Structures are given as C-alpha cells and as structure tokens.
Image 1 (cartoon, rainbow, N blue to C red):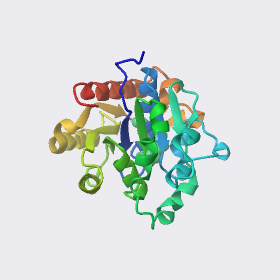
Image 2: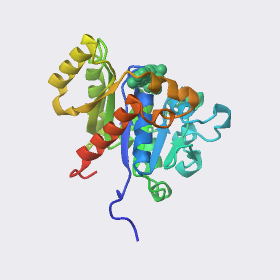
Image 3: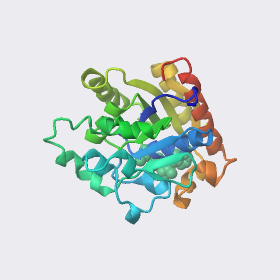
Length: 269
Ligand code: ADP
Ligand code: MG
C-alpha cells in the first residue's frame, strides 16, 4: 500500500543566489539533512562545479564516477549518477569541475535549459520516489542556474546578513521572471532565508528589517545564526546536525525545515 501522506512527485527546490559565500551550499546540505532526519527521502543535486556540497556530504572527488555533468549531457540517467551518503534517507548527485564546461558544450543544444528537468522527470527517476530534491546552484546566473530554475517548483534564496545583501536580489528576481515567462510559469519563490545572522550586530538587524520591509512574508521567520559549528562541519564531511546535534546551527536548520514544510501545507506541493 502506498503511503498517502507521501508526496506523489518530489518537491524540487533550487537554492540560488548569484553571490558566492552567502550560504547556498551550507543551506542545501543542512536543510537536506534536517528533512532526511524528519524521515523524508531527500536528494541533493550538486550543480556547482566547485563540488562543495559533494565534498561536504562525504563524497571523495576521485571516487566521483558519474556526475551531474553526465546527467546534463544526457550521458547518464539520474539513477546511475546518485549515490548514498552517510546520512540515512539522503542521496547525492555529485559534481566535479567538469561541470564548468557544460555551458559551452551545450551552446548548440536547443533543449539546453531543460536538461535537468528532463532528467528529473524520467519514469526511472520518478520511481526513486524522492520527497524533496534540493539543487545547490553555482554563484552565477548561468545556464546551470537556469537549468535548476527550469527544473524546480520553487527557489529558496539564502541572504547573507551583510551590507549590499539585497542589491543582488533584483538581478536574481529578473532571471526568475524570465524563466517563468519562458520555460516554467509555475516557478515560485520558496522563501528568503537570512544566513550568518548575528543578533548583536546592528548590520544584521538592519538587513533583516530591510528584507522584511521589501519582501514581507517571503522572508522566513527562521534566521540561521552565524555559528562556528556550521562552518566546522563540512571539514568532517558531516552536516551540522550530525557534527553537533545540539548546536544553534542544527536547531536553526531543523526550524527552517519545519517552517518550509508548514508553509507548504495546504498548497499543492
Ligand atoms: P555559497 O554556497 O553560497 O558559496 P557556503 O554555504 O559555501 O556559501 O558558505 C560560505 C562560507 O560561510 C563557508 O565557509 C561556510 O562554512 C560558512 N558559513 C555558511 N553559513 C554559516 C553560518 N550560519 N555560520 C558560520 N559560517 C557559515
Ligand atoms: Mg556553494
């Protein structure tokens, strides 16, 4: 008997912001770990040639046989690219630096923006029955990020609590609008999450105030604090939830997962 509480198709979320170092990869790994801990079947797709999500989840670069590069070039199906991680319920589609040439290699491919979507929508991929797919995007609004946005139901934007944080958002929103108009009309904004938040720092508070004023309910209540355990965890190839389960960072990512799930109650997915 299928469990009726299970989503029929996975909820696909692109974690995007063209600024580097704002917490995309950290959010992908730890939100993924929090959802997996809550017994959802999760797939993390590493769409950044830097492969930080892959490394952070314990994948050793020389062991990466088939990667998201092969997936995008239609040389390997999803089921052969994904591999298990040390986190139960969490699988990984790893990346390597190969992915950095995908842009150029795909220039003449008319379906170049749809490749990830097609790979995720294949019957074999659907049989894997993931509940949540999180796509870690590169720090750019390039073809890779567009592939993520075309494949996704929604975009989650980590916003570093720092000066100029909001400046890049308009460009991101423009890309989002273009994707909506061309390839994925139902693409939603999942939410904006403040990362590296420091409540003792006036700048953090100012960024929060500005973000809530400009973006209202799109900003998650949950703020991810600046927390040294979060930054230490990847060098042990662990999520912060495993590395220090009682840390403030772990609590924040559990809260973010809960808030995201609650927001989605009542909506179609
Ligand atoms: P991006 O993927 O957007 O480039 P990362 O997730 O790699 O950003 O984060 C950039 C750096 O900031 C990493 O070294 C990461 O460990 C650190 N970092 C991210 N979030 C936090 C946080 N909440 N507290 C402390 N350090 C963090
Ligand atoms: Mg990253």
